[in-house]
Length: 385
Ligand SMILES: Nc1ncnc2c1ncn2[C@@H]1O[C@H](COP(=O)(O)OP(=O)(O)O)[C@@H](O)[C@H]1O
Ligand SMILES: [Mg+2]
Image (tube, rainbow, N blue to C red):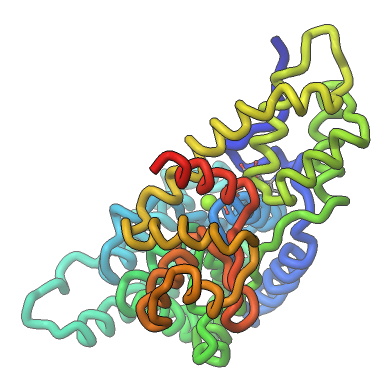
């Protein structure tokens, strides 16, 4: 047995990280702005497995190298259901991050007052307050806490970076994103906080909102699949660390099958690598062929099923019907024809399929299945029913 350098469960090791040059350049630029007292924020959007979490992990590393205090939020969905919980979570989370920072640990003893610097919201949840009043109260609490916190730590950190992963769960909380915008906009005059949202966000896509305050405050970049060059470089880098090489034909095949989709790519590579016998040190088409069935089984289990399962029964049926168009890319008119439904009846289900990542919306009224391997998965299901 040998160590498999392709791990689909975690963000890549720093030396295996590839691409995202534009997004990282923008992040570094915004960080520099923030450090110089003119904070800027951004957002990252992309479907499942496109590399959002990996990119945030890279940003965290960059910001920490610049000595910033970084709070990366993830897996908070069940803990944050409204704006007051978000406020608490941010305040306590930042405080924990600060305590965990080893450069600070030594001095904590002398600084008992730190414990009282950040005060979570405890007592404004009274039923007598309206939604707007609660939101205003939370804004004040968060702003005052973060401002006081910044004043305390500004000698030690050039800036504070807050990275919020899975931010689509905040988008579902009424008013949460505009709440953040309002708080950090006011803070930007007196402190150095930079905020990055990452997730399957929908605000940047809504046409009517492309010039909205949210889009201006959190300008969005949408993550694309890796190019062939990036895919090759990823495979080569990872394999080099275990003294294995891959011939060109298999690299091409991997790119073709994965379409450069980061999760699919890593998954395929992981399985092909397992086909390598101990004595072998070159990946070839032979290994690719051997891995085929396993790749499909695993992608189904870990990716396609978890994505398709939450889709409503009706939208599922429509997805299967859309296969009959016989093409990955199709127009709304074609969808109406194949499903034999009225446009206004089919539209909500198509939107659901887009929202849940099964379809991509291309230009106006044109859609595509998000991946060819997903089409294979659907075909199999269609044959089963
Ligand atoms: N820039 C990258 N370089 C190398 N591998 C990556 C990169 N981005 C993503 N990956 C790989 O793809 C997988 C899925 O990425 P992830 O960041 O979890 O996607 P998301 O958060 O968008 O669902 C990760 O486990 C990682 O192995
Ligand atoms: Mg993620």
